[in-house]
Image 1 (cartoon, rainbow, N blue to C red):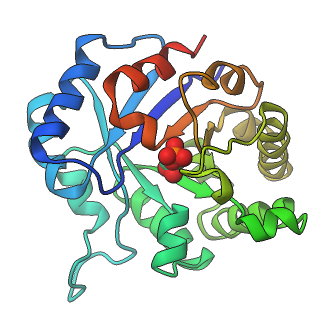
Image 2 (image 1 turned 45 degrees about the vertical axis):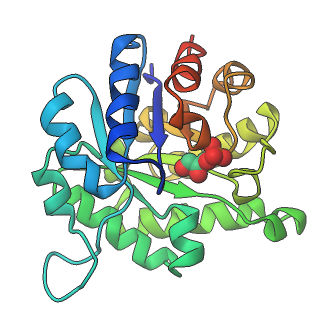
Image 3 (image 1 turned 60 degrees about the vertical axis):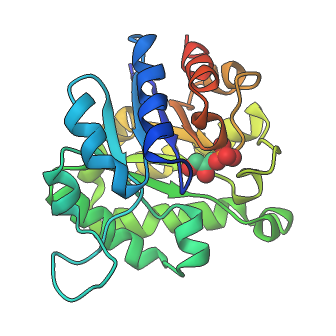
Amino acid sequence: MRRKLVAGNWKMHGTRESAEQLVAGILAVFPAHCDVAVFPPYPYLAPLIARNGGALDFGAQDCSEHDDGAYTGEVSAAMVRDIGCRYVLAGHSERRQYHHEGDAQVARKVGKALEHDLVPVLCVGESLEEHDAGRTAEVVQRQLGTVIDHCGIAAFGRVIVAYEPVWAIGTGRTASPGKAQEVHALLRSQLARADDKIASSTRILYGGSVKPGNAAELFAQPDVDGGLIGGASLKAADFLAICAAVC
Ligand code: 13P
């Protein structure tokens, strides 16, 4: 049985004060029936973890593919681990789109995260153009396949996959529960071709305009193991309502 995970990706939103309030709001009604994690912006991570690390899991929104060196502006997986993060996102579509991260680079980031004892959350998903051209399966399988090739299938005993169709992120358009299930099942069958047992234990989250009103139906799909929540994770009440939708 895969335990569901609800993760809040705050992206580049908020202030130190709003970050503290959001964490306090989540902890006030702490959902124990599923795993919960938040991914605040870098500057707020260390102080939030220092204060709340035992009570809530934290993740970073990205890490470098390099160990250390002259890479101005980058943060290494070792640093992210050092401050107490459990998770790190890899290959979020906004990194792929705005920072031109390719599949191979994302795979190297997943590898670094694993080396440093983090749980990577590998994001995959097709653009609107690819979706409309009927290329969803090809795109997500290529993105996942590159990581399987680079890290090996055994890594997926630890790696979490997040299917986030780019056309559904921040747009209010959500993949229908049936469509999400179809893509999740496809990803799981790709993992199963390499190792059936690992595939059945890998968590595959859905992300893209998940809201309190649509979460239950998405999470009820057999291959949807939770959600990666953007906008709705910025309000404690909405995020908690989404956590409550996990049955
Ligand atoms: P929204 O929930 O705002 O669509 O964002 C999804 C996302 O990108 C989470 O990583």
